[in-house]
Image (cartoon, rainbow over all chains, first blue to last red; front, side):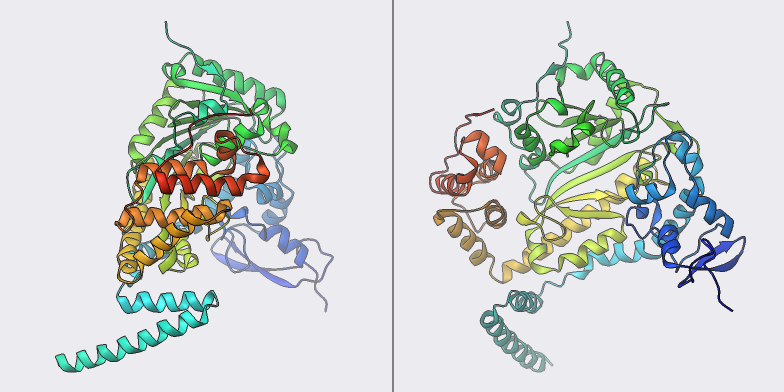
Length: 175
Length: 363
C-alpha cells in the first residue's frame, strides 16, 4: 500500500519527522518539500533555536499544530513562519504571542544543550593549548604542509625527530 | 543654555585627530569592548516591517527625546540617506556601526539616523534592526561600565518601550529578546591563529554561546588576526549572568592567546615579527590584506619586545591610515594608486616614525 506525505497528502514521503505529543513521540512521514518547510533548512531558524524543528529532535506539537504553524501569519504585520525562518526576525509585538510555542520549545532545547556542553567546553577551553616546544614545532610542521612548503616541513620534521630522540635519552638518563 | 546636538557627521568629524576606538587601547589583547541595548517603541511594527511613515514617526519621537536629554549636547547626528559613501565607509571601517553601504538599499536607509559623540564611545542608531540601538564602548575590557552608560541613556530617554511578560523587552531578533542586550569585544589574536586551528576554537566558543568573526575579511580566517566576539543569545538570562559568562569566555581566550604567545616565543617569534617588519618597510606596493596582516605581526613584536624600532602609538596611527577610505580621505590619493601610496605611507612611518598630517580632502 502506498503512503502519502502526512502534510501535503500528495507526494511520497521520503523522510521521518519525529514529534512529541504529550509525553509520547509520534513519527510523521514527510516529503522533501514539506520537510524543508517544516524543518526550516535555512540557517536563521537557528536564532529561535537550531534544534527546534529537525528530524532528529522532538517538537512538542502535534500533526495538526505543525500544519497550522506552516500557514500561520501574524494578523498585525503579516509575518509568516516561513519568513521568520528566512529572516530570523519577528515583525511586531504580536508575533511574540503568535509564535510563543516556538520560543518556549527552543528555550527548552537550548537549555538542555547548554547543560550538556557548556560546562565541559568552558572547563576544557583553556586547557586545549599545549605549548611545549615539541608541540609548537609539530604545529609549525602541519602549517608548512598545509601551505605546501614541503622543504620547510621536512626540516622541522628532522628537528622534531632529533628532539624526540634527545628526550628519550634524557628520560632514560633520569631514570 | 545647554548646547543642543549638532547635525553633521562628516569625514572631518570622524578623522580629525582621532583613532578608531579599538586602536586607542593600551591592552595587548583586548582592544575594545561594547555593550549594545536594543529597544522598540510600543505600538509600532519593527523597522523591517514598518511603513516609511511609521519609521519617520518613530524617528522623530526618539530624536525629540534625545534632544531634550542631557546627552544631547555631546551628540552629532545625521541621516544615513544624506551621508556620502565615503562617510559610510569611514563609519564601517572605524567599526562604529554597520551601515548599509549600497544605494540599492536606499529605501531601508530612509528615516535611519546615526548619532555619535565626539570620541565615538557612544553610538545611537535609530531604525536599524530595532527602533533604538544604544551602543556604549570603551577602548579596554570593561563591560560593566559600558552597560551602565548604555542603560543610563535608555533610562534618560524614558520612552514607552515594547515590553511584555513573560518575554521581557521585545526585539526583532528573538535571540536577544528579554534584555535586548548585545555584547561585543574586539581582540587581537595573532598567536592563537598561528598555533591553533581557528575552526576548532571558534567552534568551542560557539558551544559557549559566543561567536568570533574576523573584523577584516570573512569567517574564521580574517586578515590582521583581529576578531569581534559577540554573544549569541541572551534570552532566559539576566544582565549580570550574560555579562559575566561573556566576560569569562573572553578571559579564557586571553589566557589562551597569552599561552600561545609564550609558545611562539620558544620557536621563532623574533624571526617572524622582524620578517614582517622588513617586508612592510621595503615593499613598493602593498594591498590592504597584506598590510594589515604584516602590521598584526609587527604589533605582536612590539607587544612581546622583539621590535623596538617603532612604538605602539605610531603603529596604531599607521594602522589607521592604511584603510582604503581613510587613505583616500587623509592622503587624498586616487583609488587606483592606493597600493602604492599605502606602501609609501608605511615606509615613511617605519623609517622616520612619520605619519601623514591630517588633510581631509575631496569630500
